[in-house]
Image (tube, rainbow, N blue to C red; front, side, top):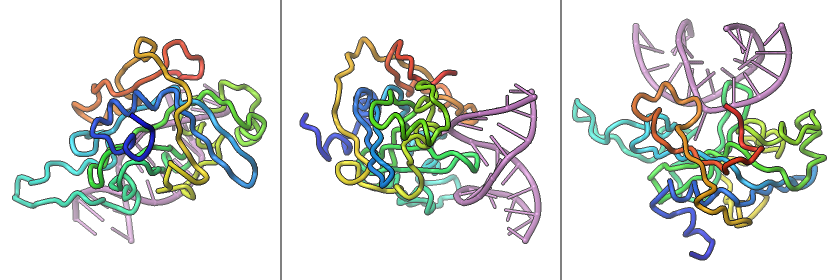
Amino acid sequence: MAFGRGFFTGDDTIKIARELLGMLLVHKTPEGVTGGMIVEAEAYIGAIDKASHAYTGPVTAKDGTVRTRCGKSARTRAMFDEGGVSYIYLIYGMHYCFNVVTGKRGEACAVLIRALRPLIGLDLMKRRRKTSDPLMLCSGPGRLCEAMGITKEQYGMDLLKGELTVSPFRKIPETRIGTSARINVDYAEEARDFPWRFFVRDDPFVSGR
DNA sequence: TGTCCGATTGGT
DNA sequence: CCAATCGGACAG
């Protein structure tokens, strides 16, 4: 499939998460340009996934209450948009996490980008992260946001054009893609074991456990 | 209004 | 192992 809006609005977020491996994330700011190749990502499927911030429970609750799935708060609103925009949130009051929204409007699917191989603007990344170790720049969802200057300022942005973009770069063969349960979702009941984390096998920039 | 806690990280 | 630090979710 040609790369474009249709890539992000596809109905299989698991497949999109796998295909995001090898793609390039680039952020242009007044300070400079940074970018890296995605090497680790996790899928979140709002309607059925207790680990998702967009999970609202059954559409019809036990008491007969009918829920609308159009965004439950200002924080998660972007996840309910059409695929191809950013969903960014603050975690533990100090780190931002960057997601690619996927699927159709209202589906509330997203892919958390957990690690990049840093390729563009290494000096700027090192300054922002206050380290010169390449392995400490973009290996972890909070780290990559700090290295690339991604904050809530970039919330809801179109990733096909503009200052923050995702685009094809390298094709990662299926045989090089590893799979596991997602990190730090132990609270999510049955969803804790969903094998929705994907990473490039043997890549040193994948975040540690 | 008050309390609880997280899709994390860095330092003991 | 544990603290940092803040806003969303929910109880009352």
